[in-house]
Length: 199
Length: 321
Image 1 (cartoon, rainbow over the protein chains, first blue to last red):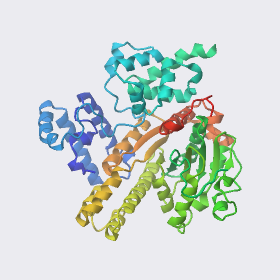
Image 2: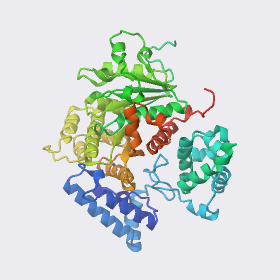
Image 3: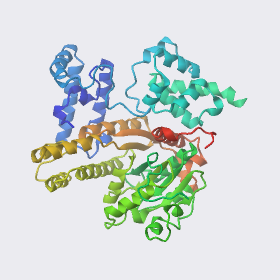
Image 4: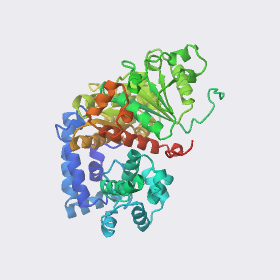
């Protein structure tokens, strides 16, 4: 583990070295909120001195990483010597294991625009996945949803779908993995099941 | 019945033991243990709930079963010959309860040999999942159980009191883990010192400790760093009322990264829901009594994540077992 002063600005803000300015902005807002003096999440953990240091370095990281020239210079002096801990397009080690940790979507959201806004049914999810060149095994590893369940979801095999509450969790994980809006996917998918279930 | 000799690797690899601890009384550990256990069993997984809450064992009440007459002590005192015999059935298929409070965690006198023996017996119980409700204390045995399980879950509510106690628990568990990894007495003394913020060495946080450890022995310092990196506790935020409350979970994760250097895994949150109180008063588990309630759906979602960590064991609803 590294001391605060040894961490790169990317580590301070918990973003990848190839983070977009939007990601940096979001990460900064999260860090600022987390480490403000009256934040409940850090209550009793840090001393006043530690807090002050963290707050300062968050501001400095944000200042440097949001200014193109400063960031370029910073990258040259800091990242090359660190062997680029997170090579481009690879996710952060912090990358969530669970679907709910939505902070780091895979950068696929443009595809959802390309394919329109749903309605997301099994077939549609399959199409989007195939267009991304991802097989079910990869999705399964990414989301920890068993391949069998993904298949059932894509094929809409109604009688083999897991119970509604679990299905929602799986759909959320799958949607996030594809970079789609989980709520929209869940809504569309469950909606599409309604008439089939009544039959 | 199968022969269950010690050390026999019957299905041990498939089984996962999760412990639920930390925080303070009333943060929802027993509620979550009982209801997650039911959700997992509804997925077709065989689940055993262990009540190890020293101060306030009442997992049975959450499940709507009478106070257990058998407990782990009947097994330890050799009043029964197999641990299976003290398992208490519940109204939920696939779900059994084991009352173990006094024996598991009581007692400064639970020797580590005995602890390991109990643990091994538990590991050999036939099940896919074992959920242990540790209660809120910071006793050494509680910490040990939390640390040796496959996954330790902290249950926190977004209030300063709960968060303070959770960090206290996490610090104790963290340093205990490090202490177990070093071998020299000087390294152990250093870690003991680090737990007291007013220590003479000026060690204020884990980074300071590693630096100080490096001065004693590089080898020991390396071991400590490896332990830090391998420590991945889990977090469930309970009784959230606002979107901002949900964010507190992410903030706790960031704070743990900065302070301890550990990756805390935010498993999920459960919304504040009056149906929870109602179900407890009725002594009927929420996910059975009111599965459509918001809180029940949150619990089910978290349970499905736990099930996903055990892909071998997942079965479809309606599929034959």
